[in-house]
Image (tube, rainbow, N blue to C red; front, side, top):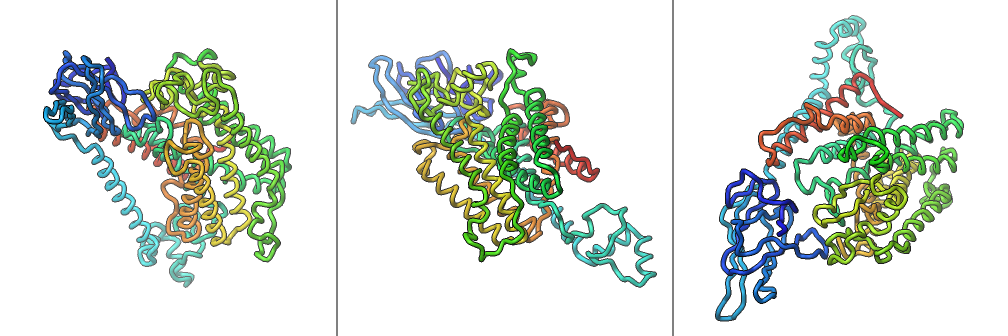
Length: 597
C-alpha cells in the first residue's frame, strides 16, 4: 500500500495519535461508508501522472496522511466489481482532520463521495504575514532614520555631536554650517554626509545581485519549508526558481562593464583573457571541491564527486560570455547622438557577430533537445519520467539533457536527488546544472550582457536606458508567451528550471529587465533608495555564497528546534540566518573587505 505524504512518505509519524497528523504539509483522512473499496490519489502538481493507491477499506489503519501542499483528486474503486465508483477533488489544509464518506444513492444508483471536515486546519501562512510585518517595521524605522539624517537641522546637530573639533574650526573660520558639498573630515565614515556625490560604480547592479543572493540564501536554508520556496517539481515556477537565473543575468551585465573598464585602463586583451581564465578556474574549483552536495553519498572521492553545480555553471557561462565579448571588443563610442544612422539599434549592430554566435548556440540546444535519439525515449521528450506521462517513460527524466549527462559524466557524478524525485517518483539521477542546460544559461548571461551594453552606450541618458530595458522585457515576454502558449504544461517548450528551457530563459530575463529597470530608477536615477541592505551582499557575493554553503549547519545559522514540524520555527531560523549574512556583509563593507576573484 502506498501512502500520500508530503508528497510521499512511508507512514503516519510516530507520536501522532489516531486522527491527528503532526507533519508539515499534511492532513489526516479517514474513509467511511462503503466497504471493500480502494482509494487512490493524484496531485494537481503532477502532470499526467498515474493514480497511486492510498488506502484500502477495510484496513487496520484508522486513516492516512494526505498532502496539503496542492489540490488532489481522490478516486474510489470497488474491489469487488473492479470499477471506479466516484472521484472527488479537494485541497486539504495543514493539520486538518477529514473524512471521505462513500455512500450509494439508492434512488439514482450512483455512488457519491463527500469530504467532511472533522477538525479545522491551521493557517500555515500566518508566520509569513507576521514576518513581513516585522521586517517592514524594521525597514520603516531605518528609512525614517535615514530621512532624519538627511534633514539639515538634525544633520547639523549630529555633526556637532560627532565631530565638535571640526565644528569649532568651521565656526572660527566663519564658514558656517557644513553643506553636502563641503569637505568632511576623513575620520567620519565615507558616504554618511556626502550623499549626493557622484558614484563611479552603479549601485543598482550590486543591489540587484544582492537581492538575488539574499533570496538564494533564504531558499537554500529551507525557506520556512514552504513549497513555493522550494524548486518546482518539473514545469512551472516558484520563488526559488527565480534567484539563480537572476544571478546569471546580472553576472552578464557586470561583465560588460568590467571588461570595458579594464580595456579603457589600458589592459591588453591577453591580460584580460588570463584574468577570465583564472576566474573561471577558481569558480569551477570552488564548486567541485567546496560546495558539493554529493557528500550525502559518503566522503567525497572521485567515485561520487558531483561535477556540475551552481558555481561550475557560473564558471562555464562566464568563460563563454566574457571570452566572446573580449574577442569582439571595440571601444565604446563617445557619441550617442540620436541622429546617427540606425540610432535605435546602435547598441545591437556593432555586436552582430556575438548575436550570430548565440543564434547558432541556441540552434545546437534545439537540435540536441528535439532530434537526439535517446534510447527508450521518444524524440524531443521534455517530461519528468517516473509516473508522469501515464508512466510510459519512467527512465526518461529530462530526455536528451539527462541522457547526455549520464552518458558523458556518469550517473554517480551528477545530482542524485532532483526536485522531481518525490512527486514523480523518478528513479534515475538528473542534474539541473547539467551540460545541455549550460547552453541556455550562456544565452541568459548574454542577455544580461546586452543590458550592460545599454548602460555603456547610453551613459547618463537615463530615459533611454529605462526605455530599452522596458522594450527588452516586452520582447522576451512575447517570446515566452509564444513558446508556452501562456500555459504551464501545454506549450511547445514549457518553462522548466531543471532543463533550463529557452522559455525559462526568456521568461526570467523578462522579469530581470523589469527588476533591473525598477532598481536602476530608484537607486541610480531618483536616488530615493541607497540599495541597502542588499547592496552590501552584492559587494561580497562570492564570499557570502561560499560562506553560507560551508556554515549552513553551524550555529548560529542553524540550531535544534523544539518543534521540527512547525513552519514558524523553520521560517524564523531561515530568516535569522539570512539576516546574519546581511549583517556580516555590512561589517565587511564597513571594514572595506571585499573578496574578488
